[in-house]
Image (cartoon, rainbow, N blue to C red; front, side, top):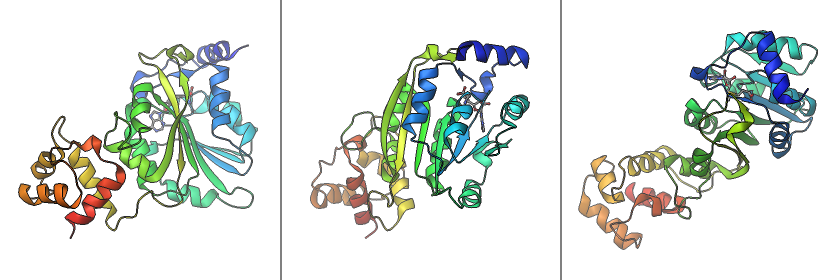
Length: 286
Ligand code: SAM
């Protein structure tokens, strides 16, 4: 039985229909499944947290390679499938919860012991909450080695853009680049899933840096400034920061941009690198 047939068989046996509201698109391409596990470089020293195991396709490959797999799934209807499939594995744990509500710091701390020395996130993400999940994984400063996840192709481009260099940046690109080395590792056509989504997908890999990429005294302020800068489409950096009350005086900000940072006061936020934003924040705080 190939993966497509196996998935159909499981769905029939357990009378499962994919739930659109939970972003359920089940992966049915063997090469892509193996590709994800290979890109994540899973070994017996790894704890893998899988977000949204669904019917367990990726989970079964992860279990063969990892020291332990903790799968976090919101949908109650697939729990018995996962428990039936993996009951013989003593390195499998299933948590029935919304990933956005799981205390991941505690979960990781409790499970990094003995020969299990690092934690990696691997998932075919539910697309409706891609940004909140990635934000949570980075914001909570988890003890993670890498994040390897499938997302929509267009979103993948934005998430892996290098600020100041690539065109398609948004505020989350800076966030990701601050914490990690991001790259697209696989492109995945829509026909690799049941049901087939309306968009193509890509797998991205975020390799977490030991220290954030730039040194900054007030991290929160840096991200407030970046968010404010991108809050209004097609506005200049100057206008967005004044409109969002990051800086009360347009003249002062104009002076900082042109005199201290040697920038055109009409500069748009997407032209700034992460270091540029960091320098700007340090000057605004003075
Ligand atoms: N891993 C499976 C695969 O590749 O075939 C399923 C991937 S499917 C794109 C996304 C999975 O995330 C579904 O199983 C869905 O039920 C689950 N999910 C959706 N929202 C979730 C949430 N908030 N927390 C945890 N899992 C969630």
